[in-house]
Length: 196
Image 1 (cartoon, rainbow, N blue to C red):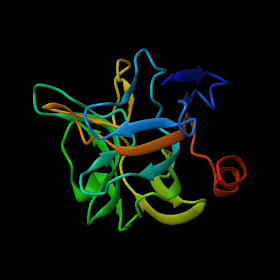
Image 2 (image 1 turned 180 degrees about the vertical axis):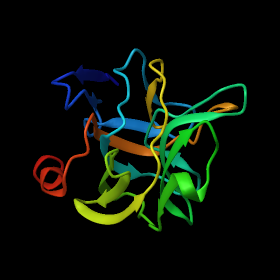
Image 3 (image 1 turned 135 degrees about the vertical axis):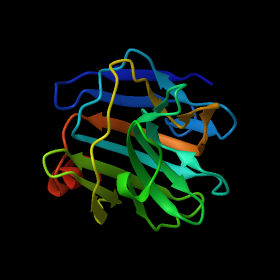
């Protein structure tokens, strides 16, 4: 199976666009067993952002990470943004700035996806009003104010896993296509025009 991974830096607004191609469905196929895409030396993360993927789950029995730049320090502190699906809970975004998870710094939306169905998932965060938004198939599903995350210039962007104190965890078992990250919070009309 041949995989071609393209990283295109278009502008400061659209700073990372990832398109993975394989011979199967021209997408990144992940089996939930210690495989993921790591983008070393990626452009630094910004306070406002949009992250978007097309995803099709092969299994829903374990926590699955989407696009992550969440990292753990040996001192027990977490930094960055984690975006994942929790079975029985739904989709969750967490902003960490030295602490751990909590209701004050996370945004959870109750959602139960189906296996073998494509979804367009998009999250935005606007640092000027601290508003986090979750879109499913181009429709605003939830919004919540949460504080901004703290980042390091060395934060590595990962697709299909999350960095925890024990190493990479929460491997996605499914297919990801058209993963994209913008350095701004796109509005709903742009999300519908560009992504869905």
